[in-house]
Length: 537
Image (cartoon, rainbow, N blue to C red; front, top):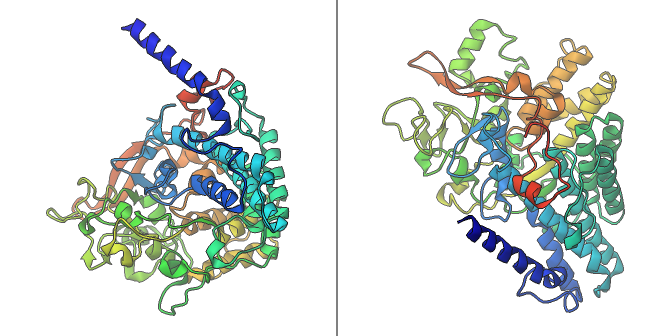
């Protein structure tokens, strides 16, 4: 048997070697060769659009890159519990992930695939005819910014990674991991070069493409996650000073501004908050996250940790109000509608009415009974991006997914000011108030938040509730080194009215010696003799 396996492996290797010449000249064995391609502007646009194909989506859908579904990724943090017939995000906080993890393997493989697509574009675009030379430069800048994005994403997930600045030849496959400084320098340089030839904005038809603001936003995210607060401030201010972006305000007076941001009304050109987004990337958000009683999966359900993070309308945490109030809000999270409106926009709780269903996860016979297949596991539901318009088309929604939005960059800026001891800079309270007021929350109580530590506490809570289920939380936890506290021990869900206490959903464990980064995939280790695994994996 072993001899047969060796023969099959030898045949596969020979087959790969025999097609090396084709591999160098075409991406698809049946496609045209490079000498016949890369001639017209239409060729460039087609190839460039392919390079956009690796961007994250919100929830699982019909995309090339489903391993990077950012709302389901929240199941790897303290925001939610993921349970479905797809994905393995839930394995990370349970200590069950390995270097063969579907998500870790998929993100790594796909990001380098799209790095190659962007690199091939940059290697060939100059030979194509484009009537407008400035447009040609813009196309190249888009490809360069995309290549930087994929490197940034790999860096955030895996730590130091190989830098790839061209389409690799077979004898270059054994790439080595660059140092942290080298990765930061490469991403920064790519984004600076790209920003020169990118516009501040586009018409609505092209608003999903890379802009100057996208480059500055990526720099802001890179620097905040590497602790370079001075450069975070610089990059964030460059984006703010463009004057292109603003926090979204609903066009409907009866709709909360924050809630409107995650609905169909925000898809059009009036949404100036989106900096970088993927078009139609929430095709199945309703099916994946809505209650089972609507024919859906409830795949990623919020935890009590995120529910309890929302303040009251008076700007107080429930824990500041005393044990009696904690008991009231634990049993009834939206008691007298007196919570931060961002909770109602983001989370469904027992007793809520949604699309004519009263949600009941604890009564026997309820279609939404907790723990049933494709029903909530926590007693809560993720509401963000659930537009009732999709109730009749649960598999084919057309909302965009915002990968980076203006509020995140404002929060990066505020965090960097606080961490550089500039917590009394007027911009700290100014931008926190803008974010809070947009949602319907009061100004920061400066009598309470009157020190660096208190302002840091507020900033971190604002990030948690403002960006809930959108993707950044996992990286925030890593950056703040708080996983040992919040990803260890029991995970609580909704209050069980029979047991008179919140349910315990699962027990989590976090190993700080290895879990602050994902593992380098086993198939990469096997293919690359120079690759070194992350510690502990």
